[in-house]
Image 1 (cartoon, rainbow, N blue to C red):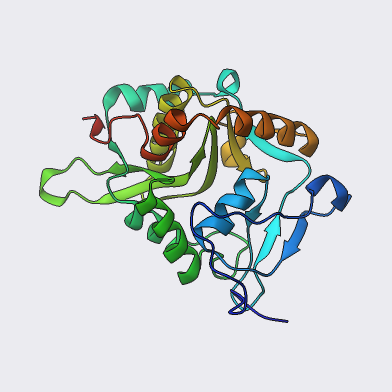
Image 2: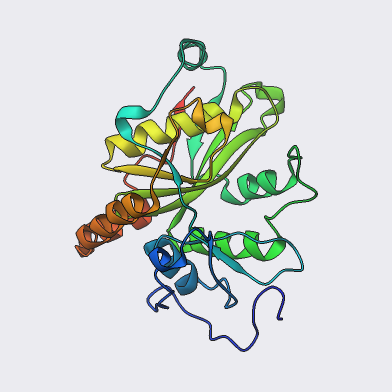
Length: 251
């Protein structure tokens, strides 16, 4: 079995697509397919069809569509009183799309309980950074406000297609840095028309922010309706570049 990207599989640009097997026909399996590569068209095909890549170093590329799906709806987003206080105090400087590469490197390097190593391999970082440069992948960054030592201390990244945001990962070097970045991003994209944030699989951290489990078929229905609405080119370009301000959000 080929590990990593299959050198025989064609490279797909952002305008080319691959048809995956329908997730509904996989029964209770999360893994829908394996193989292929992480080219822009392959990644966008996966997200548009409700799949995402998740595999370890030395494995073939595995394409997942879990059931249930873990998501956040606009009306379910939860900001605790303690987080509202942190936001009011402007403890962190938050920006969007200022340091995507720094965020994905931070997500790759952060130790995670129960995990030996990281699934965010060099190939993942390279592929998603390419999607960012094409305008499809976005990041939110939390910075220390100490002017003598301004540094990236937390953030999150994901993909936006139409009115769906697919969250991928987050990291934090100081308490609440990643939460601040994520919540600031979530509030902004919900105001911008996003109807659902896909968190993929359950975590306690995201559950405290309003994450909930829904049936895969419900998620796929929401996704397909959003992809139909996305056919409008003007909306497509707005999604690609992001209609939010990429400057400092709070200072």
